[in-house]
Structures are given as C-alpha cells and as structure tokens.
Image (tube, rainbow, N blue to C red):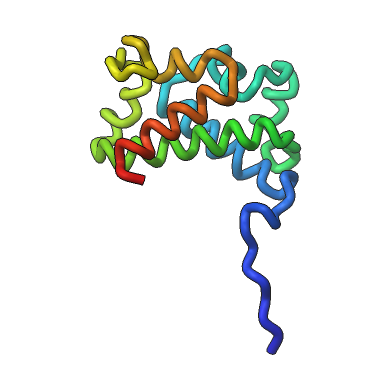
Length: 134
C-alpha cells in the first residue's frame, strides 16, 4: 500500500480552492450583513459581472491569489470571532461596532477592513488572534 502525501493549502491549486472559498465568503457576507459594495471592496474590487458569475456558478469560479488571500483573512477573522464571542449574533455584529483599540481609532473593524488594502484585513486578523492568545 502506497502512502499518500497529505494535502496542504500550499499544495492545492487556487482553482481547486476557489469554489469553497467563494461559498464561504458568501456565507460570511450574509451573516455579517455586508452590502454589495462592501463585499466587492473586501474582495479587492473585482468587476461586478465577475462577482455575480462567481456567486451564480461557484464551481466554475477561478479566484486569483490576491482574492484567495483576502478570503483567507476573512475566514480567520470569522473563526476568531466565533471563538472569542461564542454567541453567534454577537460575534457577527462585532465587526460593525466602534472599537476603542488603537488600531481602530474608535471606528469599527469593518471600517478598517473596507480601506481596500489587504494589509488591513491582516491587521484585524492579527488583532483577533492576539486577543485569543494565538
């Protein structure tokens, strides 16, 4: 019997990850009550027609590495919030609430993430990871 090499995220092609990534993003966007413009900004502003096609036919979605990286940070933010705030409604609403932490300057995490820079998604993810001791 031959041993199989375990598949890691690095060994899976972006095309193979794309359908699951777009479905996960769509679910989180719904839970976070994100409007279309917010969703597009978080994904790096793909053309609307492309975004609609991804949503309509996720199995044929082919996301670029930048978009996959953005979704990865969003998944990490979502997961960290579910761990830190076990009440789903509270966890999902947290991104909309003003935050006094210095990285937010009194604004919400969502406002920070909507700057359009992937680095801001990273900063929010790191903040939450630090809050949960990770």
